[in-house]
Length: 172
Image 1 (cartoon, rainbow, N blue to C red):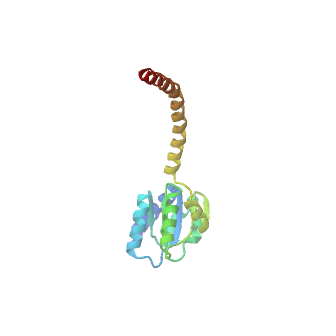
Image 2: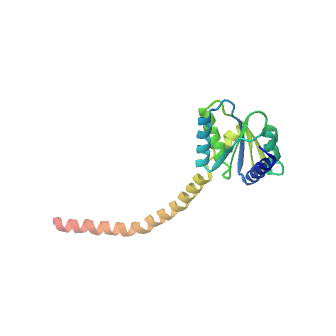
Image 3: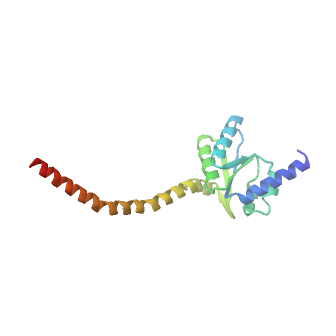
């Protein structure tokens, strides 16, 4: 990798770290290429990215970002997972780590807050932004449905009473 490529990589990573809602750092020693591709595809589906970069370049890219406090995590074979949704990257990484003991979560960052491994796992248990939006829409729609039912209930009751009288008259 020549200097121009390194500069381009550092610039790209710096921009990604600046825009990321959360960043997860993990050791990946012993993971096969197929498993790494599986992790990348799952992360892509969740709206995140997994990158393997040289530690020195990742440390340079972290400087000047909110996530700069996690520079100490970059030792050994590390990968970086990040996403704009603060929950997506931790959730996918934690789920993958449960099924694969070779992926060891070291920690991460959510904005200016640095997280240890337990913090990343706790963040992974939270609902994603899409799930929260769906719950909010459901909560907003529920009262409207109830209002419609209440407004229609008297008319339905009157129709049932008239129907009952009509059946009673037919029977007589």
